[in-house]
Length: 77
Image (cartoon, rainbow, N blue to C red):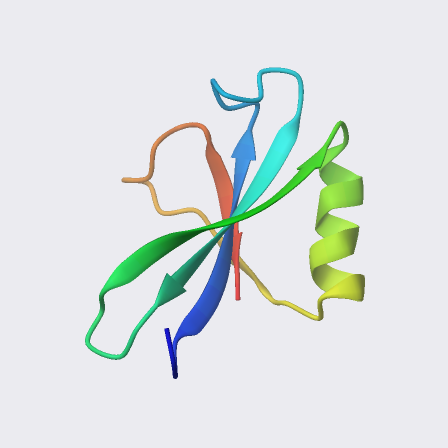
């Protein structure tokens, strides 16, 4: 998606990765259309995953919304 916003949602041991924390990339286009990408980061440690998103990718953390699925920890932009 050209001109889209990349965001990474962090999950606490989702069903498809029950032994790991997972970050999945989504892209939001102007106008709000959201697409999931095939990009996934998997880590046994939430701290390591956060380090990758913060230090390696220079992203900013947004806390989860109360209405989010309970398996969602946070989102990074």
